[in-house]
Length: 164
Image (spheres, helix red, strand yellow):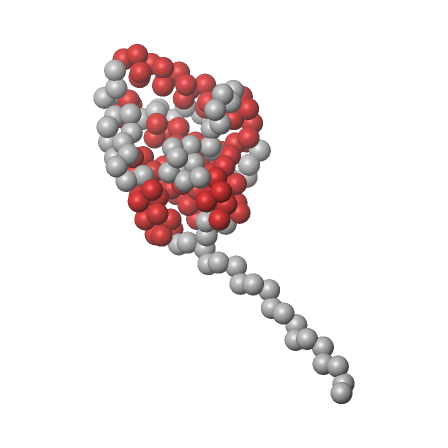
């Protein structure tokens, strides 16, 4: 009896990527109940950053990263779960670049952002919303001053202009 070679195997189909609408829904659910320093729903910050990325000419992968940019840092998503998520490798890399690590010097954080394609634009939109005078105005003076200095320093480390 002649030997029949096995049929060629087909590579597994990669999981479909989430649409931006799905990324937004997942992000909103992950941060449900969380508030920012001003007591506003955290999803408002994510929406503002995503919109800021879009206005600055960012692509869909950067907009998706904007929706998830604080997920790992805020414990809304583990790094392992991010790696398994139906997102592009570039989106995941941007989110990881924007995730601050405990005890990490600002210079190292900025260097990682600058070394990751697409991440500087997302961080620029994040800083712009964080430093929005209307958003900062509801904070106490000491907190407002501390955060303004922090955001100014990060913009300088990233070589970004002051947007306000």
